[in-house]
Each structure stands twice: as C-alpha cells, then as structure tokens.
Image (cartoon, rainbow, N blue to C red; front, side, top):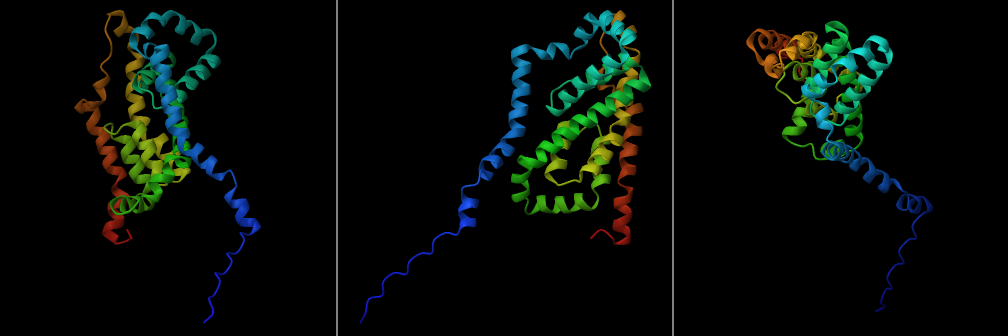
Length: 258
C-alpha cells in the first residue's frame, strides 16, 4: 500500500498578494477612529482652553459692545466668522447650540439670525453625518440585525418623515439624531432637507429670544433656555411634528408600507 504524499498547497496568486498587503486595513482603522478622535479633540479643547466660557451669556454681555460694532462695520466678516464657529461647534457636538442661536438673533436680528443659525447648524450636522457614515456607521451597519434592522428598513422607506419628526421635537439631542441618521443610511439629500426644514421652528424661537436679549442683559438677567418647552410654543411644534408623520400613517392605511 502506497503512502500518498500531501498535496502541495497552491501558491497565492499575485492579486491575492496585492489585496493582503494593501493598506486598506490601515485606512479602515483611520476611518473608524476619525469620528471619536474629532469629538475627543473638541472636548479636550474645551477643557484645556476653557472654551465653554465663550459660549455663555456672561461672555456675550461682556463683549456686547465689541460684537455690535463688528456687526455694524464688518457685517460680512462677522457673519462668516459666526457661521464658522457655529458649524464647528455643531460638527464636534459641543454644547451651546441654543446659546449660539440666541446670539445669532441678538447680533443679526430675528429673521437674518434664524437663517444664519439654520444654515450653520445644517452644515455642521452634515459634516458630522458624513464622518459618521464613513467611520462608526460601518460597525453599526454590520451589526444591524433584529430590531435595529427593522428600524433601518422603516427609516429607509420613510426617511424624510421620520427625520423631520426627530428634528421638530425638541426632546431629541441634535447630535444623536445626526448619528442615528448616518447609522441608518439616510440619503444625504434627505438628511440635509429634513434637517434644514425641521430645525426652522426651534431656531426661530431662540432667534426671537435673542432679538430681545439686549433688554434682558440690561436688567442683569439671562434668558430662559427652556422657553421652547413652554406650552404656547411646544404645542404648535408638536402639532407640526405630528403632521410630519401623516404620510407614514397614510401609507399604512393604504397598505403601501412594505
């Protein structure tokens, strides 16, 4: 009886060697760590440089004359500088968005301030959304099974309505909605449209507060950031949020939600 010698293992082909030695693995790790690294840098900057003191009504009152002068004499530069700060704060999920929106109304007026806040917040949210889609979103998509998979399917079919609802209701953290939308593969155009439209009511409320901030500061007081939760303001916003879900309900009634 002859002993059969083990068959020689085939040599890896050239294409396999290229894939094995490619730097794709390193790029994937970079993409996975990009979002948490940026957030960590933002938090570290706040702690080290005490940047939180600039996102306060005390800082706004202390620099009131200088800020008003800059807006009066260098409007374009002031708008661009303010927008850059707002975009960076939103992209890094830093606290103080409501104060920035009030400051927008204080510096640029109710209507113009609302517009600046909406555009800046949308740009910052889109930056975070784009980063999350190429980093941590990959992990969540690979693990999206069961309940998360069902949620993902529903969000894909009714992305605009769901996103508009989450933006309108002032109970969901802004940064969390950005990440959830990225993890659930919401299309970019729908994310931008839903964000820009959905944050208009809240931005208008805070910008209106900001337009009257001068009198509040003159009395040595600070505005109530919980004003958006007061019934005269919250109830109409919740009504708008409910209207955003009407298309979903209509599809379910017609049996098209599948």
